[in-house]
Length: 488
Image (cartoon, rainbow, N blue to C red; front, side, top):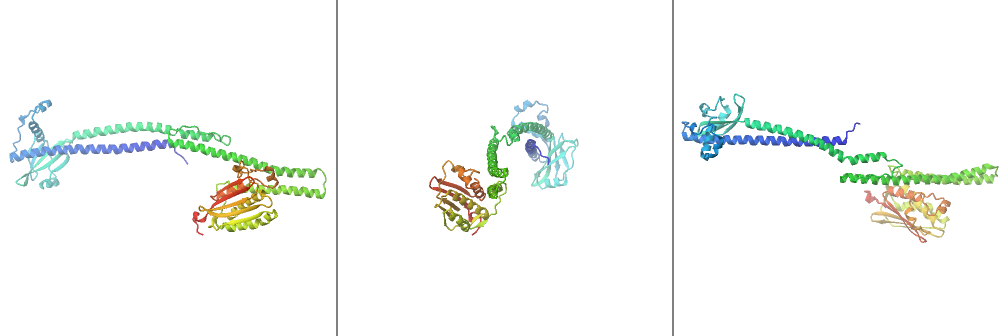
């Protein structure tokens, strides 16, 4: 799939937006100015027409307008300021009269001004409207093609329309003004778009430089260079957060890779020990002929190593299940009380053999939400760890109660306890507070690590509290069905 550049996308979007805004602004400006100019022309025509109409009404139809020699046409414009307001108004009326004509109520021309050259008959609709006493505006063209705006003003005598005053004004000035405005808008818009293109290009390059740096850094990172960090002071808050998130992600990856390396190294070490023992036993047996009893002892020792390898392999496979993206759990409502009773029943013989009292204190709680098989394995792992650290004559107590909407399951033993420096590491893989004792007792150092993985996969929490010489308490908190939307 072809992917477009985000930088070019920013440029296209910004240019499109600016072009749209310029278009809207230009249309509004052009339309608004056109409307203002045409309304100004209409207002002037109406004012002049009304003044002419008053003159006509005063002449009572004899059309003896102001004499043309009252004001010279070629008089300098600066002299206008020397005229009285009344004289100036009279001049304006005379100039307008030269472009006017008077019709009767039927539309026939009765009188024309000096500047009227050719005129077209009135449309029937316009004549009908004026006959009703309404003022009509029309936009027409002179025979030479000049656009004009004209007004048809009804003049009433004795309450009836007797004359129609037709006054016109050229729209050439309006046309030229709008054409000049259009050229200016096109020129300004083109300049703005060019500047916007250059500016958006610079802005996109400047804004995306942190992304380029991030991409370059990410492409150079490998398993051996996870210690690399993005050193960047981004100009924008969003990119700075991205850089910080990228560095935090590298921190997590580095810790994960380090933990994976340690896990692989520890696993190899754990596998090497029984394999070395098996190889040594077999080499010793093969050095010379042995008796049947000696062969039997060698086979038993080898089987013990095989059992240890099998246990270790099962533990590694259990951890591998929870390392993927998909949880291997099959969640369903389960009774934690019955689960505890089942596990206690299975381990009662072991407790009796080690002279340990296995005691339960379970309060009624709603159904829990979890995978029955995995939770049973979790409880067995916890109790197996408690058995290994509780001396003969000790007590292991299992408690169950509801605490703040969660099921709180705790296993308390009366063993030797765990030193404070070891508590933060009890859930680490292959970690042993007492290396020699755990190896001799068959521990793999993965039991509590598996417990932690299973409980966290259930959206629960697990913690350990211990005091040297008094024992250890491991507490598991699991969600109940009400919290998860189930009914009991």
